[in-house]
Length: 597
Image 1 (cartoon, helix red, strand yellow):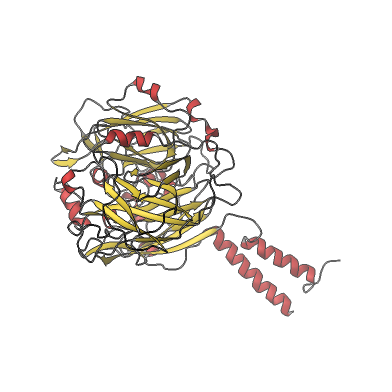
Image 2 (cartoon, helix red, strand yellow):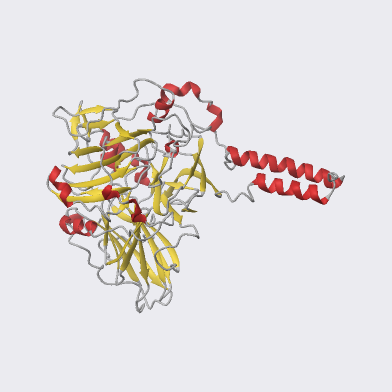
């Protein structure tokens, strides 16, 4: 006997089907949605009124707080007077370089348009940040923190902190970013920063002569006896910053998605683009507030006091304001001590992270290297009458048609897969040359810094193993010093002047990925390259297809429907989610009709 249209059995079945279609009983990975309005806003972080880039009226922007495997949808509306892109520093975008947010993979979002990013934080945990990737806009903000929490089923290798605190430190200029950009275009430098910010705010007035009156400073409120996780990011332009908290030890536990061997530090050099997590216990007697300091490393001693940021750690039972001299950091010019500190950071190979198995089960030291690239940078030099920076004698120039789109539509002549694996004996040139990576290959990259300043390098789409660094010229014999067991896995590493740093990376993520200098001035002048990783098998299992909302530009402009991205404030929804919502709505109407009958 079949149930009648109004029988409880059919109604229950319809309700169950509706729940299944809506995703309620599928146990799928959750979606989280953000609407971001990007615009200029007035601020005076160093006492000088200027325009900064805010997101939803916030500077820095909102924290993106998600959990491993969540699907993230961010609708970005560009209210600036020029194109804009946001990149997700350290997010791996598994199988999805379309969402990377750099000029090699995305057309910039024109002024007055919006674009919706959609990606999954697949098999990742940790501390990262986002920032604008074009037009030198990062110099005036547009950045914010990213937190990827462990799933409940994966234990964290330390006790649950009593609080989670994001701190973004950055060197800062009072000049507009367009002026800084113009200076570089005219062959000039950008000079010494005017100060250092904590979460977009200027220094506490620890010294009347160094800090003018009336500057708003950052305060972090804590309770005595409790332990907090401090996630500290250097989102600045070009300055390594030493971070420390007066009278407090900092237990390092994680960096850029990898749990570390837990070690106490009294201070930490945080290079441009790097992120660290520390556990800090409030174990002082709170006779007064305490200083938090971010001071410039490797700068002229005559400007050191100016390039120092100071914030306040405030116990609720504090007896008075912070006073006296700042806590002493390392010798500002001692690059040997800084390198030794970097070498001391080790991977916690016994801890799980995004998956239950230990991080060290990968055993990277036993894998055969298939490709070796020695990337040499030099001081900026004139190429065709313009000041440019290079890697292996090539200064990258971004084509009008993004590399990824050109690859997708077989547009000839946009780029070449001929980037040299060693510096060539020829004049430096401007070119669009890519590294042709071997899918599932294991690449060794050596950064040789022949410049006079410390540089940071970042690879999108991957975490790599930092296996060695030393002063001098790298040779084949240098491999004998590599750490092949617990070198930390991260996405940004520093290279000291007159020194080298070696990394190993498994090329298992299909796409075109940006390898760049994080120092904004050297990046802007051409010190970057892209790594193309193509699966020779024609399959959609290793790379997601072109997104339906792609913006087209350059040689593919004719494919763009200009109105499709004009200020659309509605919450972005994936095709799958949209189908589920429509199906659920239709079933709900049908169910209501049956109930009435």
